[in-house]
Image 1 (cartoon, rainbow, N blue to C red):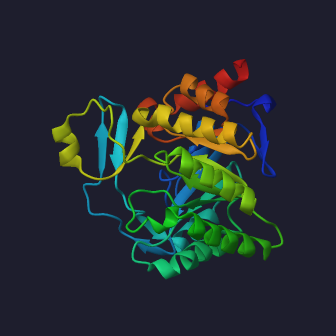
Image 2: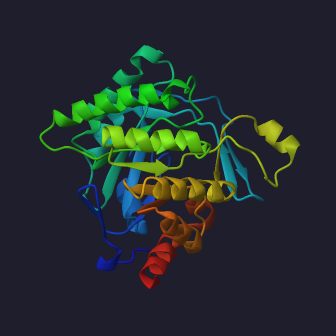
Image 3: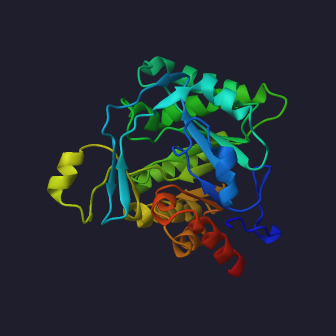
Length: 302
């Protein structure tokens, strides 16, 4: 019902062949429980995680809120997942139907000096089971995430992960997931960082902490509190980030565009802005699985 099979949809990026450019973003199948079933909806790739070394409960509930008028979601899940060992166990059931990305992060209780150790543990553990990696350094729902946005620290982290990658016979692509709230100066730093480290690509973007222009009342937003905003309200913002990165870097690296894709038109805008692949999450919740088919059909027409 949902899969569109056509070789014209194939995309070759960082040594992988994606059967189509529409993926499921991280955070939906956190523990790699449903990726085989989800692939039946016609996704070209599925990103599992965010996986942390140890399982953790995440932030106290209630921690996920729908903004129905805005067609958005605010969440502060806090990397709730069952940990690395569970993810490995689940990934051993892979039927090979779809490309799998592994989104990795640090445990909430980890001290700043041990952040890199957490990423490396997940990287080593998942390496045989995923097709590409994403370093999640931009989630607003984990404590002390300021260090993760510091260019010097990112340089250290990326270098350590790349060194680990080189110790394997087969290297896996490594991408960085960035926030939609970065200013142009910070985006310039990301472009410099990718040039310096030769990173394989960027996912733009994660959820936003900005609440500008929402239909939800101030009282409702105050009641909800902190969290990352996703869905329609961040569509334009993430497209701007994609366009800036693609234009300013002269398309020097692949970009996976994510943030507020609720229609085929939204996906095409991301692609026109410079995204090579797209991912959905909140749009998948509001629009249902028909969205994947609609995007792929629109790409074929284009």
